[in-house]
Length: 345
Image (cartoon, rainbow, N blue to C red; front, side, top):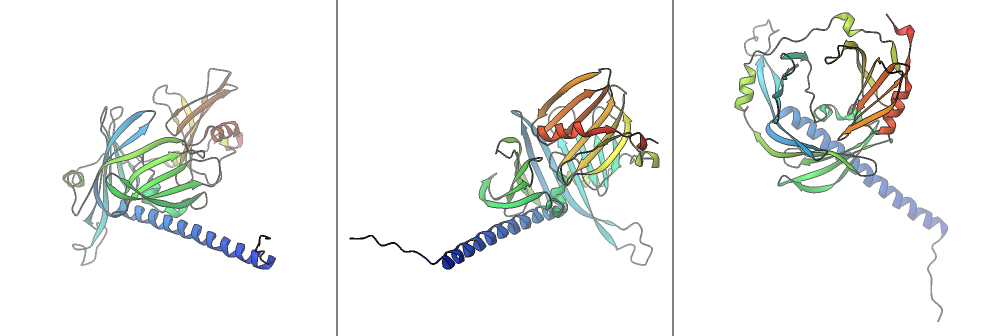
């Protein structure tokens, strides 16, 4: 007895493949939209909710514990001159981020003023609408700035800190960045866990939340911050804000833009250094250029979790690169730095 085989016409086979591909594309697009929606909800929650959290940063088999408070309050508008001046109010964010081990290190924020309390320096403030801590500030801002360099993927549900969580992956579009996995609380939208992952899936560092409390009113610590007199904001002169540097970086991964540059002296050695800071919305890359007593020195590097520090000396000039980027990317950056006498003042 001959076996029977069913052969579909070529046109029908092509049509079935096309329909299958369309369904796959639609599913991927839906996952991306769901992931973006979850990240936008995270951003909104970080800006609008009153929360009291604790988390640990785990890297190199060590853990750094932090306490993080955030709240929103209303204050009178100081620039109103009409008859409603006494009743007109604006919302202001309050934040406290404190490192719990070792010497006291606190970061305080009231609106657009951020103050630093550190053992090495006198307390000081800068004009900024975000604190600089272990959690990337973009998660509380406009997440769409990442879309040119990262894909958003909604993976599935999990359980973190005893709460139902949604896993979102932020996947780089090239090999010059790391991926970020976020576990977001389904009830509040807040973060419960964050991991930094290589393209091969190796875990470099993670942030694990150990406590999360959402409240209707401000905590007592934030109420105290609201009436605390913060250090005076450091004012940069026009020259400091518009410094032309003699050195330039000629290669960066796509999407990185310079956000700051200056010429200053190192606190430890008092040596003059040129500094450039680049950002792609999620990751900072710092580049330092300064004279060296060594004529030549081979590339040296060390890592602290996902953060890489690389430096080399060529012709008595030391160049250092610091950032959460792969070694190959840092090497390309350090080798691209060149002298440009036309940029000197």
